[in-house]
Image 1 (spheres, rainbow, N blue to C red):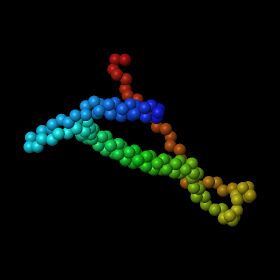
Image 2: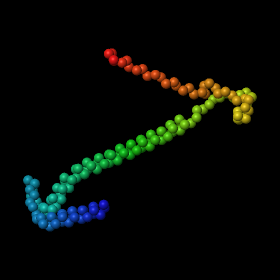
Image 3: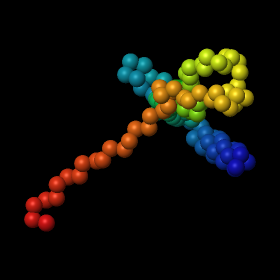
Image 4: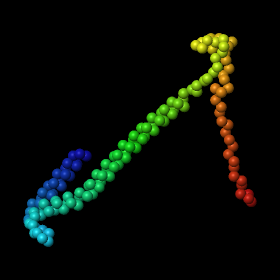
Length: 144
């Protein structure tokens, strides 16, 4: 693909060179207060650049603004992904159990080692699952 581009650019330069050689004359340019003789290919090049420059500047500015916007959105996406991963970790972490210690049990002792002294979980430590609520249905239209 790059070779095709190079060939097309070479053909364009060759065509412009042939055009310049074929039209190598000086033309008078009258500005009202001053008259100049300008080489025609140079005059054409000047007006081509004069017409090309505003649209190129506009497109360059748009490209720069879009690059900034993409960078800002990528940063926001990275921040949101970080927050999401932290939220997943928080959701997967088991809830803290604030169980009261048995008076006969040492704080560092495993309750499974003393099967006769297994404490029941504190009622506040048990998670309450909300019951689904029924959704009210609209009344049927009259006459059905």
